[in-house]
Length: 588
Image 1 (cartoon, rainbow, N blue to C red):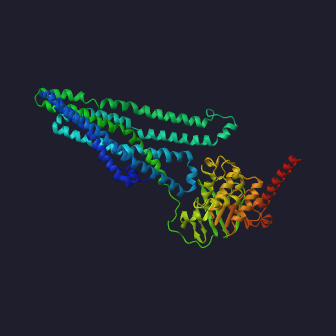
Image 2: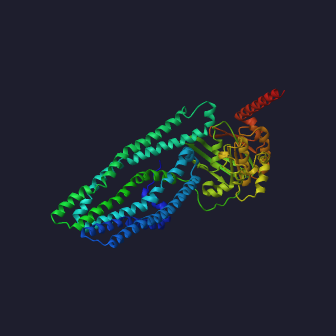
Image 3: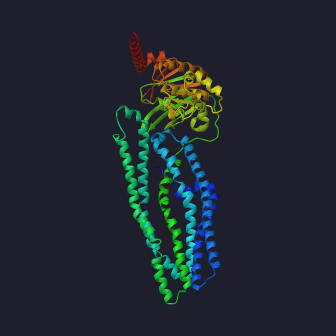
């Protein structure tokens, strides 16, 4: 895990500093609220002292009762203002942290995102960021206010009589020992709880994503061992965590309020010796009872303090991941020809590409073919700057792509993979993502050109039909055509189609090929395809084998010069002929 050099307090300050005015105001009102909570104890002390003096005026007692009641009402009034201010600031902070994380994801290499399960990232973006709320919204103002008033009350007790102040603090060391017992290893146990719940989140996402396979092979939740094991470990970690802390916490709650165990005997002894006035004795008894309330409230936040280290570290780990190194000032691009110069790349320390040299002229159609795992998609991802090459350089218009801002580069490239994602929005809005300013007419025009319009109009709500999460309401071929329409609407000068017709049937594939040929006129097109019949008219076909350029040229040239390409073509033709023969037999 990448650890930041900044501490937890520094991170929290960075998150909260834009709203420090709100937190300061919240702390002020929280302190006033706790002060109002303590004020009735002073009123009670005056009433008890008056009773000892023999005061009989009802108005005197009524006055102090009203004063106590007023302070009690003010306590909740100030507490409400404090809580409102702290939560307004905290929810703004949570929103900003989430935006920081999501923006950070757009700047990270794909390797990091692929290595991080979606369930874990969702856990950080949602649960972990939400877990910052108790610390900022409650611990900062309320714990601060309670500590300040507790200290002020203890100072006042010392002013009255230092011996009674010390007597009131006798339970404190034992309570602190209980607190230390509770916090011993707390961070480690909470981190274990978080780790096990991460695994459960990852496994749950995997389970839901694979439910079709689980059903098809007659599996169930109980027999899906990975899921049940993760669920049990998560539950055990929570139980273990609670079991180790609750005894100390319960003991501390019993010890802290037990001030009278020391105050009464010590005070009585001092009073009988004549060194302690009865008024001071009474006030000390009442205030010592009152001061423990804020201290217990302070201790109740120990749980949030124990968690915050793990919580902030997880968020900070994402924020401190190294970005793709890119400038912020727009670069000058002279055309859209693409050059790969001695490109090498390794994924998870496993070499994938070895010294790739390739020139893709602007406005040309270049096809990348070869055995699976050879590095074709990796080349496409490197050009799209989803990863940085390990060595060598890639240029567009004679400018190194590492010198081009990501926003500028993304506007130049339309990238369509076989597993492009559709959002849980209407089909119209999914297509419009290619060009947010596009009119409905533009969306429908590109849908017609990419072969989408007819099947869209057959849907219950046409273009307003929701595609479902990940496009789950559509077939694989339909999803693919929507993503192609989205890329075409973007109208980028460079188009990369990475197995873009993998899920389409022959009829729809022909429609898409026709649409693509019209929509990419004058553009630089890079196509990755296993169906070689779809790329025979390409200006240049590049055969990639074992991370190297094995051969390149036109279809006819490669049939003569590349044994690998010739074998691939013959295998493709034999499979296609076999399928066509079987279809004819069925029809006959």
